[in-house]
Image (cartoon, helix red, strand yellow):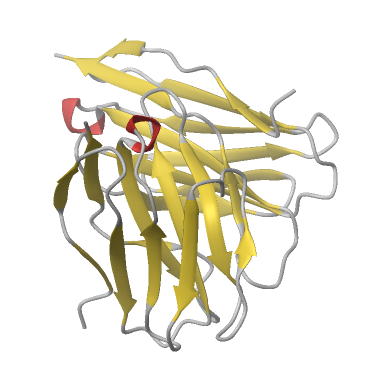
Amino acid sequence: QKEVEQNSGPLSVPEGAIASLNCTYSDRGSQSFFWYRQYSGKSPELIMFIYSNGDKEDGRFTAQLNKASQYVSLLIRDSQPSDSATYLCAVNRGTSYGKLTFGQGTILTVHP
Amino acid sequence: NAGVTQTPKFQVLKTGQSMTLQCAQDMNHNSMYWYRQDPGMGLRLIYYSASEGTTDKGEVPNGYNVSRLNKREFSLRLESAAPSQTSVYFCASWGIPSYEQYFGPGTRLTVT
């Protein structure tokens, strides 16, 4: 079992819809969870992070964390073609130096 | 403030040749990381340096060596390149009070 797993997709949604991206992790000691977006040919950039159970909202993005189920998700409301990218889930297992374990990424395509 | 810089951006090597990838950050971060990214594999950690003077192996260290030259610079060396090392290489840094890893622009390496 991989430490961090994502459905590689591709996930295709129409413009204006809600895109739902999912991630599961195996280490119950994991403490903080990150969503990065990566456009083709570019480096990853942080969208948001979450460390408490529940929801965290930032504009059109909502991260959801359920530590009991070892599950973290990212919802993108009112999806735009500019949201088309690869979304990487990453987990910090509590190290003091920011070490992350990444999932394989989910390719999202938003079509007009 | 350039963030994380990497050189070169592109490189083509023949099997058996050696090269060093350079990375520097100007954010006074303690921790630095080297990843490789292959299609469908997400980001895999090669080596990291939790603080100046320390280095540790990540998930895929075979065939690589690293040097933490000072707090700013962290280099990755391929002693005898193999076609399996064809990949995109990203350097990243992390430091308090930030929660995120900042990534460089990447080096696209092809080994023929």
